[in-house]
Length: 159
Image 1 (tube, rainbow, N blue to C red):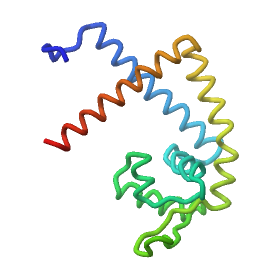
Image 2 (image 1 turned 180 degrees about the vertical axis):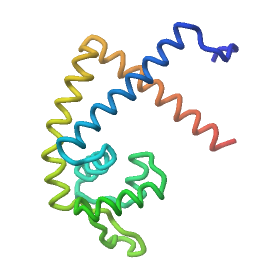
Image 3 (image 1 turned 30 degrees about the horizontal axis):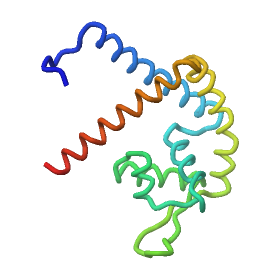
Image 4 (image 1 turned 120 degrees about the vertical axis):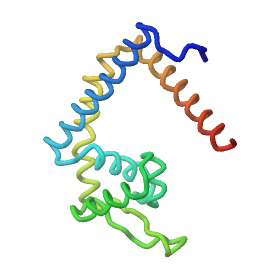
């Protein structure tokens, strides 16, 4: 790590460009999900995780870990999704003190309808824009950042 805490002009441009790209891409993707399918980006994230779970069910804390959400945010959002019929809470088979979050037929239908269009938009607005030759570099760079963050968290946990 550099002793200079300030970013160079080039580093500042790259950082701000990354932030703008990430924010605008997320906004475009989530606006489309809302307008076309009535799903928020948060709904979609929960539905993806549940639809990829082998049984279509997960404990709320597992969803929290998968999404990096705080417990209260997860609880409130799951309540709203349950009111709309996308998920339901059922007693956990292993420990009845906790509930499993279960993907309903309506939730499964919603993700099945939205996912192909969402993937097509990700391809059009991200994959194709980045290009095949830069995609591997972007993947490697993203993995390096994730490793650095995990190492930072591990150091922080162990004092």
